[in-house]
Amino acid sequence: MDAKHPVRTTEKTLALVEELMQKGPCGVTELASDLDMGKSAVHNHLTTLQKHGYVLKDGDDYRVGLKFLEVGGHSRKSMEVYQVAEPEVKSLAADTGELANLLVEEQGMGVYLMRAKGDDAVDLDTYAGLRTNLHTTALGKAILANLPESRVDEIIERHGLEQKTPKSIGTRQELFQVLEAVRERGYAIDDGERLEGLRCLAAPIKSSSGEVLGAISVSAPASRVSDEDLHGSLPERVLSAANVVELNINY
Image (cartoon, rainbow, N blue to C red):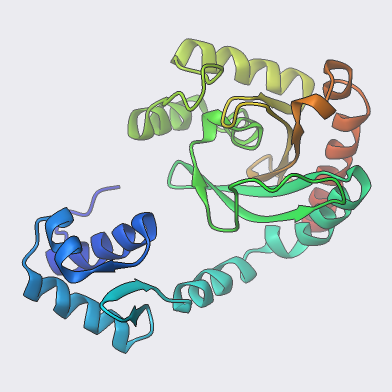
């Protein structure tokens, strides 16, 4: 939802933070040029953020501070789905030897709440707090499949259907066909749709009323996950983990 009366000063501050997140340490001149802001204004915003611990200064460059981690950590800790699912995500990673993940939907995007690495897990670009398009991941499709059609259309309208790889879903019709298949079998698959060469299998986590709270998954290199694995013991293990989380939340 767009603010009716956005505060321009706040928007500029947030734009600076997001620029620092994307580019890493930057100086005032570079930030002013990239964001089409005056150097004095950029400096004032940064020094205010620095005063409160949200930005740190190294030499002439500024970078995002760990204060944001404190804020995000507090938000995550307050979420029941995270509290309940954390041990199951760790157990899933240990049992499979692969990378296990927990994701929720916020403002139409997927947000990774945590990940746990098994002994053979590959190190991906994901981390707690990373936001991603829902249609490109098994986790996201497990969530989308359990949202009302009108809500899915809102998400498509807001965020589009960007194709991260040649295998990514690119049309509304294709997405809804995939979501129907997810509902029928109870779990979702990502076959190189966000990262080429990676396969992922996810199951939704739902409340007793049927509301989707998030999704749990296992990710592994395609070379280690056969077609048989995608429809055999692996979904059973992921569905079992989701079921345990649901039982602990609901009862």
